[in-house]
Length: 525
Image 1: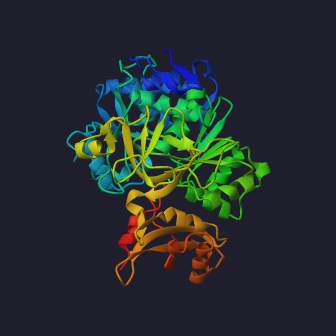
Image 2: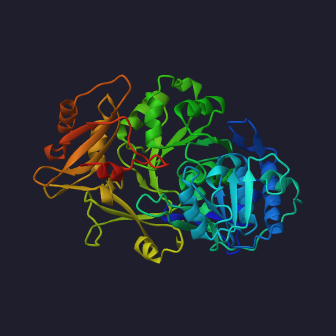
Image 3: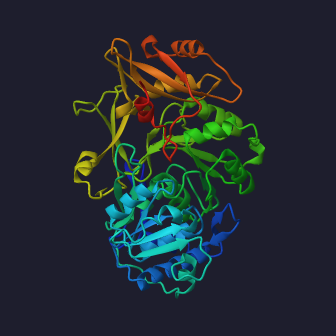
């Protein structure tokens, strides 16, 4: 397979992919000369998987799926913890032409019921520890005919490990093309039912080349750890596609990434690249047991999922001598398309367009915004999803020709740096002027007592919308509402300060760590 990456200073980078192309075969074949090198490490068990073992097991699993009667383009829901079997299952499906539908393992039985029915899944690959959430559904889903268990050491014919051992390692690769549906990811569903986002075979390597190599500079010598799980778009690139594209080593953690777990991995396995989210970075910095810079080997860190408060970035750099590259991506675009870059970080901004992607900011009138004017961020790039499955209306609203609507409000300055202003639904209009809740949150985050904050709009006694801040204080720290209001007034225009301050123990979040401001709005009297 011959992929070339064209880089020219006068034109955007381009990844040339042949028409006949299988994403899993590409990722495995490019590591054929590294068969003895460790590809994945399970931080919980200490077990590892070399590139040679991964290639062998993925092909065996592909053959097992064929033996079970799974035809190309049939769909299999993949609900697995981040163990060594995850890449085997994911890549094995793609080798067989089967479409893996990666599911968030933190969801409910009701959510899984919707996904299995919506995708018309013929198979389910589920970690044994997660099986109780699916047991009420087995036998109730008309299309579901096979349930395969991961993390199961038994000799059951439906245990993934047993299925792999029972097959030959013959390398039969499904005849797929670059524009075939390769895998699905379901959106978070924070604004309604989850949406099945369909991605193509070409998309994985596009993100690896344009962001993984083009921005991070990932290379074979790197060891990487992503706190975001593999079933997330962000985590899939971080922990599987990017390291496999260059032959690096990835550390996986089946458990929740608590500060203690994360720091244990950073100290023991010495990752050079760490991928996190803003809430996790805040928790890591607040941990009294955090290690010293000399104990770690980090060269670059990234953040996505939500805009990174400038204060957190600055504190991290001061503590560990390593920048956090704040960026934004989406399930629809598969990975990050706008990011800060090494040596060019501006904390408080989301950076510049990732080479290979085009960005524009559009006003409510549909016209391009001027420098400094708030509008919706739209993206054009090679990893945009094909569609939302079974949702024509949402597909047409989000994918407008070459442009994908992000639903995020942004401004851009004369230097090409983009600054986040909040989700379209979160924007406040105070006295007829747009106020970004994130700007107010960023101001409050500079106070030494504040750990986390979310700003929403609340009507005053006259029915006019004003900012309200819900604040989580650091353990052992204190601050009054008047003190925090005065703190904001010193930094921002007077009309932007929060009229109300509510101190809370925690903020509602999605499984990806995004603050759910709509839940805070719903809780208001």
